[in-house]
Length: 218
Image 1 (cartoon, helix red, strand yellow):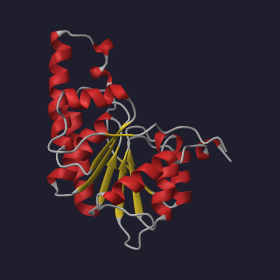
Image 2 (cartoon, helix red, strand yellow):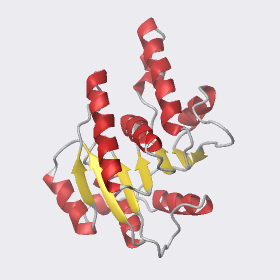
Image 3 (cartoon, helix red, strand yellow):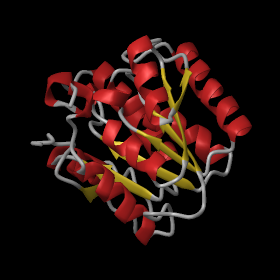
Image 4 (cartoon, helix red, strand yellow):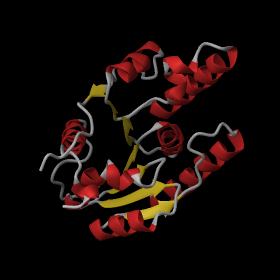
């Protein structure tokens, strides 16, 4: 077993079980669906999400992964398990609104063309921009993996006027992205508390806590 295969099965099982309960992707499913997985770091698709991707493919779905870097080894591994890869522009840590709008527009254009049934983004910018793109296109099955809300929500970000302004903007963007979500997974109490504190979710939807991506001890 190589390094990229040593990932937890827990995350995949939580996603399949929770989605099935909400009328989403069942496990196993006879209906082939198009699932778009959006990441901010290409390598993370195999380091952290390989087991999830493999299970989605094994369930008979057409899985497309989106990420910013061209990484031949990752793309080869994704192709090996039957996942298509599409490179997208994304400044992972930048604050340039024009670059972020380009990310949003690119994702929206791809989603409009590919018509995914489920959109599954993780980390801050994929959640915000893939979430907004999917919602504005009427894609109802939007499932989010909140592996961290971003540095701006940490104590280290401080309470300066700039930090408060950026945090306020991020909260508004999160609310827009998560509106009408099917399920929102969180991995720690801090993110769960912040999502509730800033009222990022509407209606009866609450974050679903799971114990993390974990390590496959086998």
